[in-house]
Length: 154
Image (cartoon, rainbow, N blue to C red):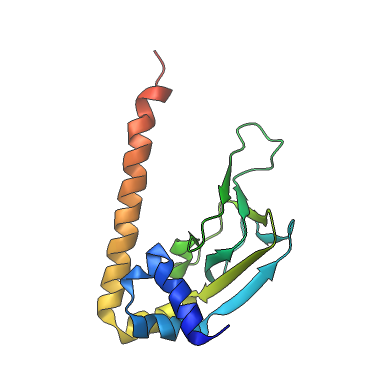
């Protein structure tokens, strides 16, 4: 994969919109293209991934439990540019879902170490990353709160 092509892919990914073109090229240089066949597992619950993944093509399924377990939820990920595990860009933490390729997929792995070095070089990027994660968390919490009345017992 060419450097400019990878930088373009990162530019289409929401999380990496905080980076300018030169920063995306630096990330692209340190990134790895990965290909999975349908049925292959990208990561499992409890795994600590080396960074975040950007979907280039194909479809993935994210499951929070085994499909036969009570209360299991799954989400299909099929939009190119979707970032899987953006929090892994700034912190090592166990994955809370298992992600499996539904079809053949192509991904770009952006290592946490590469992003960390970039934040050290560009402190303003670190501030943007923190603000982006905080905003995303506030949006998530807001959506969960709005569903609260649906789950309250009477």
